Structure formats: structure tokens, C-alpha cells
Length: 320
Ligand code: ADP
Ligand code: MG
Image 1: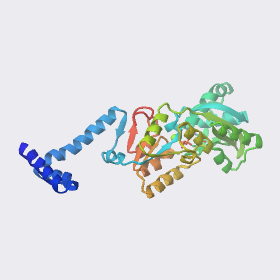
Image 2 (image 1 turned 90 degrees about the vertical axis):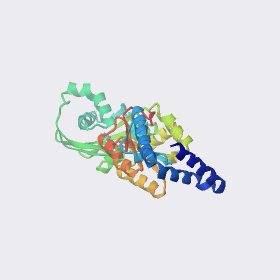
Image 3 (image 1 turned 135 degrees about the vertical axis):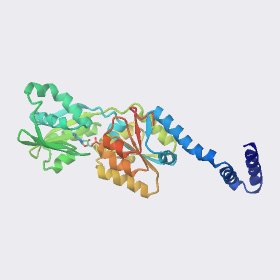
Image 4 (image 1 turned 180 degrees about the horizontal axis):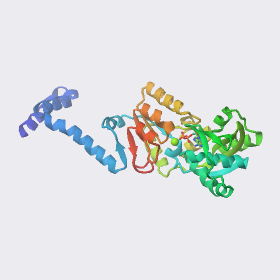
């Protein structure tokens, strides 16, 4: 062993004096030829140690290649709801047809979106009092990144992104349109409710930024990475969150469908960027898969964990 190391040192000295740019390559070539086993074992060992340390820090790495790619990432795309924000929403305002809001709350029993939990929690006592808590829902459909719809007590009920509710046929009456514009301007997620195609109620949901988000985004920017926020939420709400994180409005993209999230990552890839995407939802799965490194946060959907290369086993962005 000592003679091999001696030879390597000699090679280093000679190469440095002749052509320093090839010195490292010559030394490594000599070591590989004389003792391949040591180097052959060193790489997987380093990978295993890295994966073990990451696991202890709350980061589960599914494949070794990811570690290499993570060192090359120069662009990070972040989902908003449930990723940068806690994803535990609360209903902060509700206006319009009360009976329709009740039906919307019944419909949300079939969804696991943060909005669903918030609306059910807010309306549960009222629904129990009215004996409507267990109304059956037929033909339930979830349109990821837009909302949900189904049939309850003979009515077609839909809850979701105001633009999507409108696309189902109903433009909101003036007071509801004004309310919705006010909600998004104040940074609240606006949600519409329609019954039998008529836009009948407007809701506002609040969500807190995760404590770790500001430090995380600052760290990414300080290390020279380009950061974007992609969200299905209203553009005003996404810009508000970007402002809280110190990002310029042109890096905040709202009203983005799951297909558009995927296309956005593909476009950045075609510009030659090495992309990490961080998300939690079913609506992020395609984009997580398209990125060089897909990272699913703790508490996210199963689809996001399956699509990602890395997933978090602890809440928040701190481990990352
Ligand atoms: P992102 O995670 O990209 O920020 P979301 O998963 O919150 O976006 O979905 C985008 C929008 O779709 C939400 O802001 C909301 O308006 C609507 N939406 C999605 N699912 C539901 C649901 N179950 N109930 C009501 N609205 C929903
Ligand atoms: Mg999300």
C-alpha cells in the first residue's frame, strides 16, 4: 500500500511540474489500476453514508443518482399550497347562499385538499344541527388544481377555483364578483360555489406561510439558484406569498393547472437548467416527475411521493 501511495505522490509531483491540468487524472488513473477495489468500494460507501445521514435529517432519497444531480441544481420550482404554506387552511369569510355553502361542505367530505378540511370544520356543527352531515354524494369528481363536483339531494354542486366555477356555466353576480376580488387582493384564496350551474357563493381561505419557508428561499437565492413559485391558486395570492418571501412578482406564477406546471418545468429544462421541483399535491405529480430532482414534502399526497425522487419524513422545509 505504501509503495502505491509513494508512486501516486511521485506521479503527482512529475505531472504537476509538466502539465498541472492532467495531474489529478494521472494520479486517479494510477490508483484505479493498482487498487481498484478500494475506489470501487468508496463510491457506494459514500452514497450509503450520504443517504443514511439524509434519512436521519428527515430526507428519504429513493435513488443514488439524485445525490449527484442535486449538486448541479441551479433552478428550484416551489409549489405554494401545502409546500411553502402549512396547508392547514381556515375559512375566513363566506358570502352568498347559505344552503349552497352547506352542500359545498358536504361535498368536501370526499376531498383531502386543505380547503376541504377547513370548510368541513367551519360548517360541521351547523350541518349536524340541520341533520345534513350524512347526505349521500353521487358522481363525485375531483379536478386536480381546480376543484370538486358531485350530486347531492338532486342538485349538481361544484366548489373550486372561481375561474373553473365560471367555466362550468355560471358567471358570479356583481356582489359575489366584488367579494372574490377583495379576497384575493387581501391575500386569501378565493373559492366559488355553484349549484345547478349557478354561481351562488364566494368563500375565502387563509393559510399560514411555514416558519421555515423564508429561510429556505433566502438560502436558495444566496447560493445563486433561480427560484419560482407555481400554484393553482389565484395570481394575487401567489404574488402576496412571493412578496413575503422576498421574491419578485415575475417569479410568482398563479392559476397554473397541473398540465401547465409540467409544461413550465419542461420549458426550463429545454433552456438547459437543472431543476429541482418541490411539491405536495396530486397536481404537482407530473411536474415532480419532469424535474431533474422531484422532492415531495411531508404530509403530501401519495401521488407526489410516488412521482418524486426524494421525499421528506419530517414537516417543514428546514431539513431540505
Ligand atoms: P397549489 O398547491 O398549486 O397551490 P391547489 O392544490 O391548492 O394549488 O389547487 C389550486 C386551486 O384549486 C385552489 O386554490 C382552489 O381554488 C381549487 N381547489 C382544488 N381542490 C379544491 C377543493 N377540494 N375544494 C375547493 N377548491 C379546490
Ligand atoms: Mg400544493
